[in-house]
Length: 352
Image 1 (cartoon, rainbow, N blue to C red):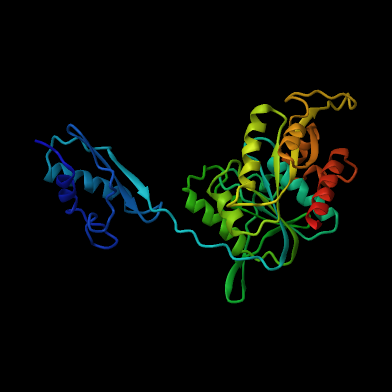
Image 2 (cartoon, rainbow, N blue to C red):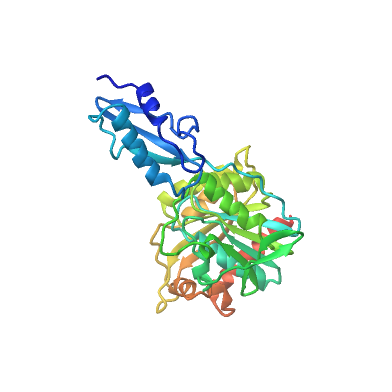
């Protein structure tokens, strides 16, 4: 018997979606990816939600329909995939009580972007400003750990007839993260539209109040979330974080170019070179350039942007972050003072 898509679709008209009672073909639940290779048939079913309760049972029903109405020799078992409709993005509402928005970005993961975001926020607070910090790294939130608020659960309040999330306050900083709302032991598997909408909710459905500076810790890379935020939210300036390593610098160059494109056009405040050198505690005057020397400085010169800071690898940075008290909280820390100088440079550039 020769198989062709129309036979498959006719068989699937006998399968009804329990939620509506309509067949899955007329409901446009059968994706247009039907593939036939000999007796092997494969295609996908499209569901509105990622956690549709009828998904598994509907796949089984579709398999049985093909076997019954097309033929028992059709290889269909295990060949029906599940897809979800992309979430329609809603525009981000402005934040009238926020004076300046700073995006901290890195095109490559693992370069210390969240460490810079956390210490920048605390440094701005130490300079006397009202500060908010958004952990927009949907798939790898680390700000709750760095502030020792992993078990925090933001509550809701009614404002102007709307239910609004109330950010968690720690060290005088207002903080929100997707990490407050998901199981930290489980991976977040979302499509781009879902992740973007979750990020926007953390911004517009929260009562941030009056802020002098709103720091956004972006996820690594150049994804849907970046485009959504920079195109819809008025960002006053971006900071790009990189290590001196050539592999990281190649990605940092792409990140800088992303902000400079015509469609995005966000001012680059400058580059932060993290892990610039290693200084052992017992040899405070020694510098070991593990990832190369001055790579970030050279990139900044090539891209005609400012080098805002060079932060060395120091054990206390890691220890303080893991302990939930970023190193800038220690007013006597030399490294903390480097972040304080970074904050001062950022505020001066934004004032310009």
